[in-house]
Length: 390
Image (cartoon, rainbow, N blue to C red; front, top):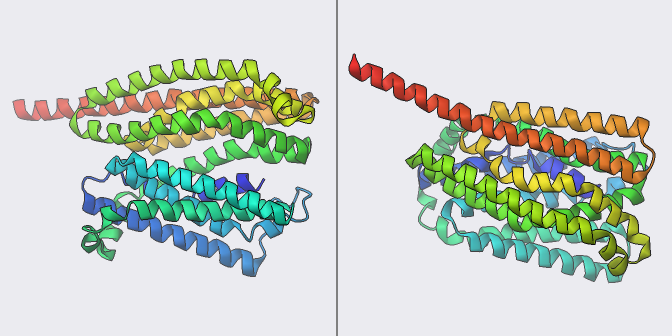
C-alpha cells in the first residue's frame, strides 16, 4: 500500500516537466528545463510535508491499518529520491549515457535491499522495510545526479531564472494537460491494490504485490530500456525526418509483440511450479495470481514504450482521453468483480483482463497520435506549396 501511494504521488511531484528535457532543442533549454523540474519537485515535497505536519491529512483511512499514518513520515524522502531519479534519468536519456542510468538503478536497488535486510535484523516492523525503501531511493536519485555531474560543469553559467521561466511557459502543456493523464495512469495502476486490500484482505494485497513485482521485471529489464532508446532516438528522428520516426515506431512495436509473447508464455507455464518450490506451499496462491495477471503485463510490455508518442509528438490531449478511457474500463472491471465474483483468483483475473483491454486501448491512441501528427505535417506542406505557387 505504501508503494502504491508513493508511485501515485510521485506522478505529479515535478508536474512532468522532466519529460520535456529530451525534447529541448539545445543544451541551454534542456538545463533550464531540468532546473524547472527540480524547483517544482522540491516545492511539491515541501508542500506535502507541511500539509502532513500541520493539517494531519490522512487519506485512505478506510483501510484498517493502524500504523499506516506513521509510514507517511517516510513518504517525502521516498518521493524526493524517486523524483530526482526520474529527472536525471531523462537528462541521461538526452545525452544517451545509458550507463549512468544502469549504475543509478543498481546503486538504488542494492541500497534498498541492504538497508531492508540489515534493519530487518533489528526489528520485523514494516516501518523498517519502508525506511530502507526511502533510503535506497534517496541514494539512487542523488547517485544518478552525481554520475551526470560532468554534463553540468560547462552548463551552469547558462542556468538562469529568466530562462527557466521561459521554459516553464514553453512546456506548460506538460503540467496543464499531461499531468492529468499521469494521474489517471497512476490510479489505473494502483487502485487495484487498495481495492484488493479493502475487499479481499491485506494478505491477498501482499500476494498481488509480489506477483506484480515479478511480472514487472520484464518491463523493467526490457521495456524501460526500449522506451529509453525509443525516446532518445525518436526525439532526434523527429527533428530530421518523420518517415524515419514512423519506421522506428512500427519496428519497435513488432519487436515488442514478439518479445512479450515469448516471455509471458514461459512465465505462465512455470509460475505455479516455481512459487511453491521457492517460497513454500503457503505462497501457492501468489503463483496463481501471476498466471491471472500475465495478460495485463504482456500488454504493458508492448504498449508502455510506444506510449512515449504522446510526449514526443506533444499530443497530450489524446493521452488524457486514452488514460480516462482505460481508467473507466478498469473501474467497470472492479465493479463487476466486487458484485459477481467471490474467489480471489477470479477477481484478479477480471481486473487483469479489464486492465489489459485498457492498455491495448492506450496503444491504439498512441498509433492514432502518430496518424494525427502525420496529417498535420501533410497539411503544413500543402499550405507551403500553395503559397509558393501563388
